[in-house]
Amino acid sequence: RDLHSFPTRRSSDLCAAQALELRAPLQPSPSTGRLLTALRELVAPLGDDRMLSGDLAAVERWLAADGPSAALAGLAELQ
Image (tube, rainbow, N blue to C red; front, side, top):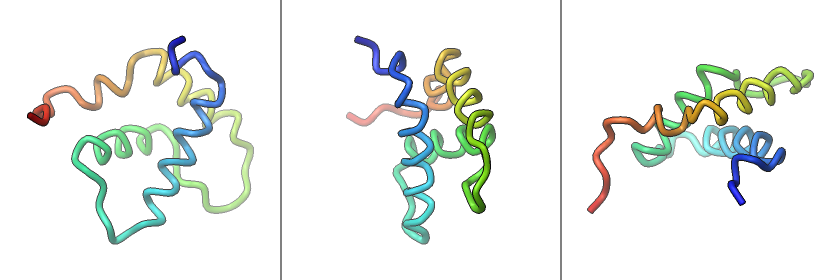
């Protein structure tokens, strides 16, 4: 099964982004950094409580449009 088809993928991506930001000043790898930047262009970090349905829908559209691949385009693969 394609992991992108699971509804929890959207929320786990948002949780992972939030967790990475809490680790500052540590920096993620270049590829993870690109994914985080692309995700944050769609969805703001969670500060105060808010409805997440719009955020989840935006992430779902991004995943369906293969946004992660687009975010990683041009990044040299590790050997």
